[in-house]
Image (cartoon, rainbow, N blue to C red; front, side, top):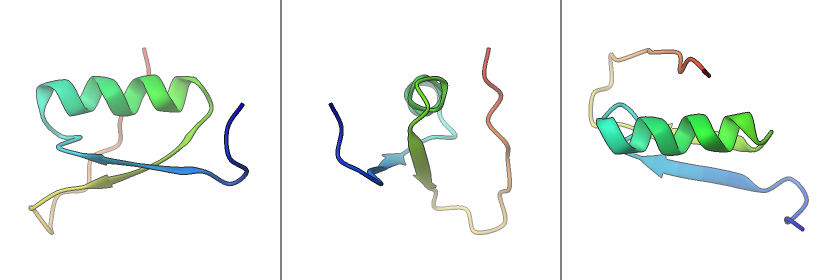
Length: 48
């Protein structure tokens, strides 16, 4: 049971481990926000 409107923050989502954590959360239907140190990076995470 989750918190209504729960937002999961993933740091390092453009790295190896963070990418898989973000993808797993998204596949479970969770809301995800990523944090990166690169302000010009705009990458969509692919599930699967």
